Amino acid sequence: MVEFDVKTVDPYKQIEPIRAALETDDRKTLATITKHFRAGDFSEIIENLSRTQAAQLFPVIRKELRADVFGRISFVHQNYILRSVPLDQALELIRQVPEEDIALLLRKMPRTRARTIYEELTELDPEIGRQLLHYDRDEVGRWISYTFLTAAPADTPRAIYERLRARTPRSHPVVSIYVVDQENRLIDRLELEELVRIEATDPIEKLLDREVTSLQASDSVETAIHRFQVRDAVEMPVVDADNRLIGLIRADDILHLTQDAFSDTMQKMGGVSNFDTPYMMTSVFQQVRKRGGWLAILFLGEMLTATALTYYEAELDQAVVLALFLPLILSSGGNSGSQSSTLIIRALAVKECNLSDWFRIFRREIVTGLILGALLCLVATARITLWDVLGWADYTEHGKFSPELVTFTVAIGVLGIVTWGNVVGSLLPLGIRAVRLDPAVISAPLLATFVDVTGLMIYFTAARYILDLA
Image 1 (cartoon, rainbow, N blue to C red):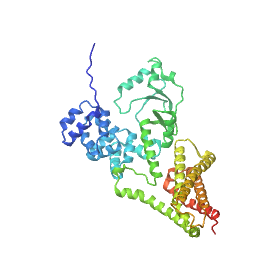
Image 2 (cartoon, one colour):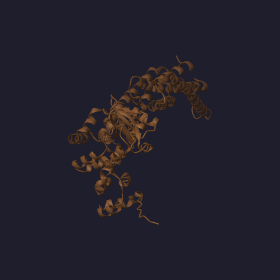
Image 3 (spheres, one colour):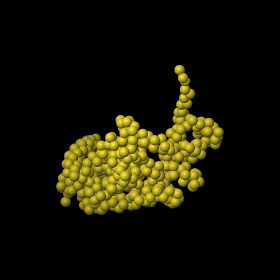
Image 4 (cartoon, rainbow, N blue to C red):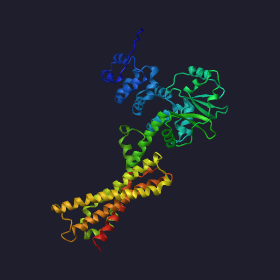
């Protein structure tokens, strides 16, 4: 029996020795530890190191692996490594990164450095500049890869195998063969395993059904994300308006774009402008600039609440007890509205509903709001009654109002504002989408401000009639 010498590498067991060697700048020990490391092993190690340690380790990586490792690690480490090496080395690293990853990396870099690298890149490789300038950042064409294999219907599996053998190693393996005509129009897509179904000398035309799913270069990133999700695709061809194949987009690129889209949405819903760099790499000045505008808008919005309270000053003078429950009332409406808007924004993003479903959504949220409002009414009633029975609070204004009327007023206010919050929170995103804007701009704080102002009207109107306020 022949025995083989197998070297098993577990990078996680080497993290602490590597950190110790980095602290003492022991290059010899680092080289010994990482002697049998592959690109994936290095990337796993780097992701468990600090940015400074990653920059120290990177020069130790064998030259033939550096570009592959660089393409696998996170943006935070990529950015720091690019800052730590001379510009010519940075350009060399970036040129080894797939075209679609270059666009993503430059998008996330600080603008000044990104501009410098972009100008140098376009001088060295005009094709990269064409891709980055020709398409908008929200279009599929900005993120496509030009690394793919094509064939003509008359080609044989043997000829395709020869082309595969002649290819230089790539960061992305070949998954599919794209069949095109003489004018490069897309005819079909074949997976490699399909080639074994016919003789090596037979034309691949026998395998073609001429049905292929593709994306337009002008399609939105959101459209691409959705199509990858519903089709469970590994990669998808991208064509121009004349159905000519210009590139493809892969699942790993879609994953990055999905993460970015999720991050952008969360920032918008939190009332923050989009950050182009990670939190720890964003200066205090940038933080203030990105957050200040929204805070000013929300502050002005809250002023409307004060204006509404002034309008109901007479009611407050007659029943000061109403002011005790304002935080309870307003928070209930804001919370219910935020819940509804979050659910609808997500449903729109993943195509679970569309604008034509507005009436069904309206009915559902009315019913949901009434049920949730009724549950909160029970909680509010129990709380007010308990405090009154135990003598912990006097909500009757020294006998001016009965406990039952005060409790009923608060309960009706809660029921009304929770239902209203549900309706507004669900329909407002649909209205924003109808005018072709991003529903995520309805940040939770902004929605809560609107519901606060209108909720005051509901609460004091109910109090005026129930407590018989003049």
